[in-house]
Image (cartoon, rainbow, N blue to C red):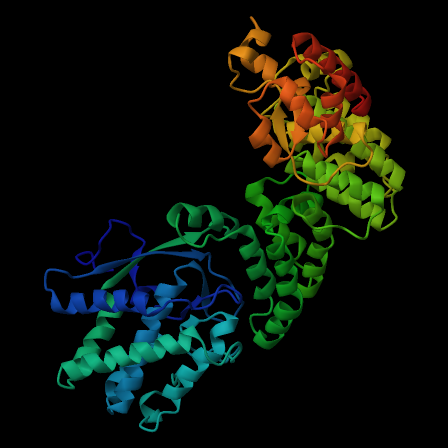
Length: 581
C-alpha cells in the first residue's frame, strides 16, 4: 500500500488490489457463515467511499483486520487460496461494488473500462479449476453469486473480444437461489445508479469509486501459521463479534475436502453435520466440549494448542461422513453429562452414575476416561460391574478431595492417559487398576481427615455441597423427589440475637455453613422459614417433601451446638461408608 495512504505502520496493511493481486483467491471456507450484511452496513461502507472521493483531507480509510490461514496449496495447476477466517463480509461487499460497477458499465456501453477491471477481479485460466473469480463464496451463497456473475458474463452489450479469457466464470452454483447476497447486490446497484444520476450520468464517478475501493481502503492482514490459533486471535480482535470456535474450524476442515463438490457437500451437511450440530444446540451445549476429550482419546499427550492439528492428522485418510460418524459416538454420553439429555442405550446403573456425575459437577478433565468407559459398556467390550466400580472410585476420590478443600488440579494429568495405562494390551481394561492408578498419584483423604472436614468444617458455597446433601437425602429415603432444591441454613447465615446466643463464642461461618446445619428445601419454603426460630421451623420441616428435612423436624426438639455436633457426626459416619477410600 502507498505509504502516504496507510493508516497504520503495519507492513501487513494492504489494499484490496494488493490482497487479490495476481492469482490470489480469497476463499471463504465452504460452510463458513454466509453473507450477512444488511443495508446499514452497506450504507456505512458506501459513505466511507464517497467521503474519500469528496473530502480532499481524507485520503484513505482503514477497514480493519483480515485473518487468513496460511495459503492452502492445492497442487500444481491451481491458484493460491487465502482461506479467510475473519473479514469475509467486508471483502465480499467491496467485490460486490466492483461487480455492480461492471454491470452498470455494460448497461451504459462503457465496455473499455469494464474490461479494464478484469485483471483486478478475475484470475488467469488454470487447468484444474473451472472458475476465475478472485472471491470464492461459501457453499450457501454460490448460487446467488453465480447469478450475479452470469448476468455480467451474458450481458447483451458485452463484446467478448474485449475480455479475452477473463469473462466472469463463477464457481459451480450451490445453496439458495435468493438471499442476503443477491438482495444486497440489488441495493448496491441502486446506490451506484443514484450516484451516477446525481453526477449527471458521468460514468467517471463510478470509475473513481472502483479505484477508491481498490486503492484507498486499507486492510491489515494477519496470516496464521496454524488454524488452531484462529479462535484466540478472533476473540482478542472481535470481543463483540460472533466468535470462531474449534468446532467452526473442524466443520471447515471436514468440508474443505469437498470444496470442488458443493452439491455433495450440501447433501452431507444437511443430512449428517447439521443434525449432529443441532443436537448440541438443542441442549445448549458447545460442541467444543466434545472435541477436547475426543482429541485426548486420539493422543493423550496433546496440548490444547495442538488439538486442531491433531484432529486434522487423525482424519487425514477419512471421508467427511466417516469423521462425523466418529464424532457422534460419544455425543450421547457427553450430552447426558452436561445437560438434561437422557441416555437410553446404557443400563440403569450407568445412567444413575451419569446423573450423579452431573450433579457433582464432574470436572471435564475426567471426560476422556468417563466417556470411553460408558461407550465400552454400550459396545459390550467391558463389564458393567467393572465400570461401576471404577466410577465408584472416581466419585469417592473427587468428593473426598472437594470436601477437604483440595483444588481439582492434577486431574488432567491422571485421567488423560488412564485408559492406556490400565489396558492390558488386548483391549481389555483392568478397571480394578483405576483405584491404584489414581490413589497412588493423587492425595486421597483418609477416613479420619474426611470425617473431620464433613463434621466440623464449613462446606456451604463449595460446588460439591448440593450433591453431597442430595446424596444424603437419597440415603435417608430411597425414593426422593427429583425437584430442584435450595440449601436451607437451620441457623441462618445472618443470625439475630436469639441465634447469636446459641452460637456463643464460635464464629458464625464455622457453625452455619457445616453440613449438619444444611437441609434440602424448596425455594418457596426457604423464603418463608429462613429467619424463624427452630420451634417454628421444625413444624414446617416436618411437612417437607424431603425426607432428611422431615427427619430434622421430627427428631430434634431443640437446635443448639450439641445437636449440631451430633448430626455432624452422623453425617460424617455415613459419608465415609458412602464414599469409601
